[in-house]
Length: 164
Image (cartoon, rainbow, N blue to C red):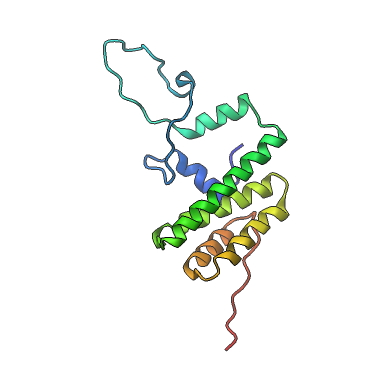
């Protein structure tokens, strides 16, 4: 099933098949017959150019054929979180401000995935941990709060009041 509209997961899911996706994928191990309308050898005299793989049908097919068991599902979520933490750290340390929205979307997507997987406490904890760890990066935390506010799954971020 595709993610609920308005979630960071839905945003990423939609971008997967964009002509220039935000997150590029390489070396997909695919059965080309599943992904292409035309199989190999349809035009044997014409050299074929590699066609872009659309990730949405690939993922849908793979998940339908081999749904992950609970242990594997947990491992996928941990790997996604570790990759997300590394990406956020790299983006923020190098102060790539134009990438702050992507970093916030990744964090929110993994938090939403945890919530959808039945662990809402862990999902909320991931957001709070990142928000606390990078609290000095106000532009990033604003992006994180903006993405969280837009999501129907994530808790509203804490309000920021000035004590003047």
